[in-house]
Amino acid sequence: MTATLMDGNSLRDEIIAGLATQIEQMGSPAICLATVLVGDDGPSQRYVKSKHKKAGEAGMVSRHHGLDADATQEEVEAVVRELADDPSVHGILVQLPLPDGLDPEPVLDLIPAEKDVDGLTERSMGRLVRNRPGLVSCTPLGVLRLLEKYSVPTSGARAVVVGRSTLVGLPLSLLLNRKGVDATVTMAHSRTADMAAVVREADIVVGAAGQARMITADMVKPGAAVIDVGVSRTEAGIVGDVDFDAVAEVAGWITPMPGGTGPMTIACLLENTLTAARLQGL
Ligand SMILES: Nc1nc(=O)c2c([nH]1)NC[C@@H]1CN(c3ccc(C(=O)N[C@@H](CCC(=O)O)C(=O)O)cc3)C=[N+]21
Image (cartoon, rainbow, N blue to C red):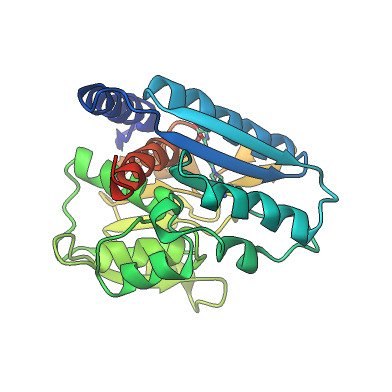
């Protein structure tokens, strides 16, 4: 393998240790992250569990609200409303997707901007677009931290983000385009014509489409940084958007999967929770 491995696990540990120190210096206030999970999806339960474990390591407290898969819209909204009104809760994360039949939009609308540790509400997304300070989606933040940590040049670089989800692709494109990061960003998606040619232009490629191993070695410019955010469930387990083994022979940097952007998402969620607590006057 020729590419430098971008190790999300070790950077996560570093970030969490830093958070623990900061919280200790604040006098160890009870900073609380609340998660809401509807249904009994296995992987979602695992992610949520891991979020709670890491919150503890950062010196935070956490709360979980699990609802049955057949919970009604009103029941889900009641839980979120209660957390929104509870001054001892600083961050609220509603695990997406919600089961079929539930509309996420009115649920997310109930999260106050200062508790929106996922950066998904209209207020948070609006602030991001308008370049105002606010909470930003954790996975895109994690991608930026990895690029920074490994000194991947971004200014003037061509970045191609494959996937346009509101959770990852869209906010990440905006962040890469920001002053200070200064990449030239292309948002590619399922209707992009000649995807291979578009990706081949990129100095930074982010796979965030959820299409198993769609980014192949022939699509990658030698020396490019390749970041895998994709999560596809296959019979062989969870598979990323990047054809890792072959791409690692071409790329300059590459994230492993697992061990790349997943752990970074959790680290940045906790970072956002501390920011949220401070926004609330802690
Ligand atoms: N409102 C909301 N916010 C989210 O941030 C959110 C969400 N909904 N829905 C689902 C996705 C997925 N997600 C992951 C988090 C951590 C890992 C992670 O830590 N993965 C480990 C492996 C874990 C395993 O193998 O199960 C790794 O990549 O090393 C993966 C995926 C957050 N998401």
